[in-house]
Image (tube, rainbow, N blue to C red; front, side, top):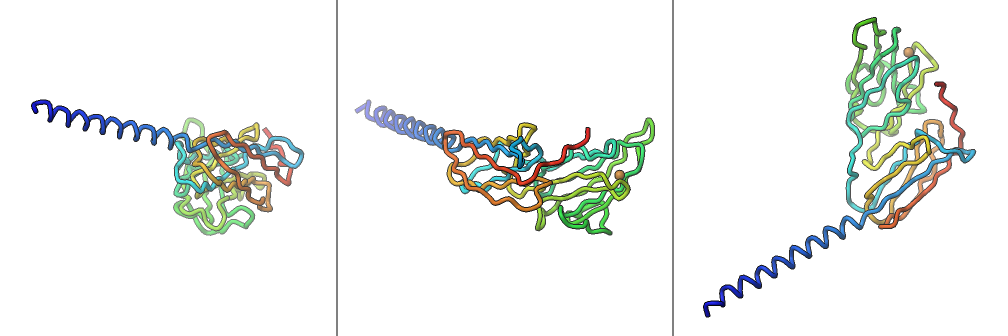
Length: 238
Ligand SMILES: [Cu+2]
């Protein structure tokens, strides 16, 4: 009789232990139910295409480990936007910094459209313009900020300069958190993508006609996909 309560609690411990094991096993299983996906983007000639944005739309639930940046700095250096392509999430703040000794008059608008004029620094994703004085010796560079509130009808924003027609840059505001810019090897890698069907699309600044989307299946085995652009991007002068 004296042992009875002890026996009861021991089976309770067993129950808790097996429940804990079950939870551990199911959490391990849920980690395993995501996979990696490597997307290679090549140009019309089959060469790796850098600075393409690969956007995924997984059907399964889950968020990437590294969210898209909500803050980015775009320099104006030697008549170029640096970086040439900036990938951010919706609501990101873009800081434009003029590192040149001369003025720049930066404008931004939906890629493929004439930028809307009249808007100024602040919250103006549809079109904005900001005049940045040149940097004088020994003084900090002038900078202004713009907030990319909405991705708008088009996620891609074309950057230009009223004073220097050759200056071109892009900002891609992705609604999906699953977006990665291709490197020099043309590859965009994704980790822990939820299992199942995934819609994939590729955007490149010089691919003016939208490429058809693709569907890939992600599982515990690493998946691969490749996309070919219909253009050969111009080389950026260095
Ligand atoms: Cu300029």
